[in-house]
Image (cartoon, rainbow, N blue to C red):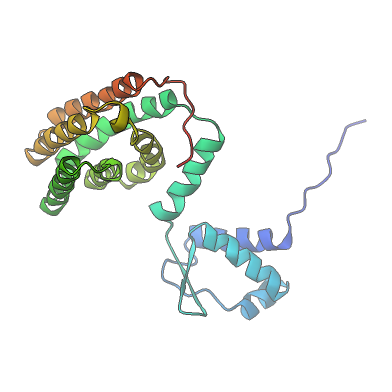
Length: 242
């Protein structure tokens, strides 16, 4: 006799969430549109208001809805602030290693640099130079410049003008470069080497030298691995949550 599996019936609030998500992704509900009231949605779906409320909470956590005032809920486009932390958690919970993140960065970051040299605006280049100046001041003052290092790579991704690249590399970059933050304590030359690489990359971007920017970025990411090993770490160490 053929085995027939039991049907999996979604909780009502998940069904509400999925239906609203389909309307948003499908374009029937556009960014900036106001979501109908809980009462209206409850009548349309044939469920109670508490079920609708729970479905709405799920969409808020996914960045598809945002609150304006106490009662207005607007359709939103998920950005880095909502997507990246969720992906970071997933990567950490899957026990990804330094090697795995580094291999991805070695492929993506030179591409970022290439596109940045082609598309960066004057304002974006100014932001990169401001970041480098802040890093130099931090190093001279003996401060940890890890956050500025991570910010540099995020700024570079914005310069690329490629939204798919910007969103996809962010969780990898956040985890990888934050993992490198503490190395300055055991590899004293790491902060200064990072800054020198950043300045060379920025100079290539400002000169619209795509090949030069990619080459310097590749050297920079390779240097990150060398620093990791000099600090006594293994490339197969799992990345710890921040």
